[in-house]
Image (cartoon, rainbow, N blue to C red):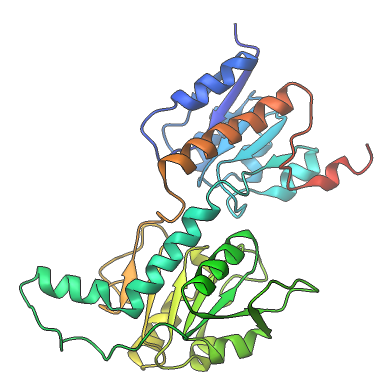
Length: 321
């Protein structure tokens, strides 16, 4: 008989070999949810010792379904799909894997930047449809020397900034306390929006950041500027983005994350030829996915062994220790 029961709410890979192998170290049985609606997850969560979740909504009802619950482990960085407050109220640690895909997301953001600046996707679509015309697209400008505005200078934002500086961009970022990094110019949020030729988003989705790029921000941007989002779809008001593109307030966008996912690709802004859409793939590489799965399971095993993992996001539950 298994020592523990662990529920995995959802996973974008075809097997759970890595997860089962890792959990075998503590004698845990893994339950794979067949659907992600709340009723199904609540039923499966009854009596489990741990929950592992990728994108499924892990609500208070799911969290409170088991009196035995010891940990909720996020397979990722952001926490917007987990009711962290409900976990904290129970004294249940929530863990994540904060650094597994820093290189991949920064690389993807830079790739999207170049694709926008050189109109790669636009001309690729035309040539594949049979139109071979170098004059079909908008005027192109030299990328070297242009300004990249980085919103959110955490680990991924800093990696992108370093890559941009290395290939000749000027990098402008929002001031964050006393943080300073070589080669980066700092300014307030509105100035970054006004001066940048590219805006790249790298902030978590919170009550404060939801919809942070909306009608007012698009009106501030240069009509030749581009928006890149590899962070969270909810940071951007997509209806406002569609309207801004229609009004010529910016030149285009690249969206790896959307709200909802998948979005309706038949409607603006997703069907606009000036918008690149990728299917939430920035975090993906063979190496990053293996690290993500292994470390998320390790966090569970550490807690089930009665120890404290390093990547706990609600550390206040340990304040009285």
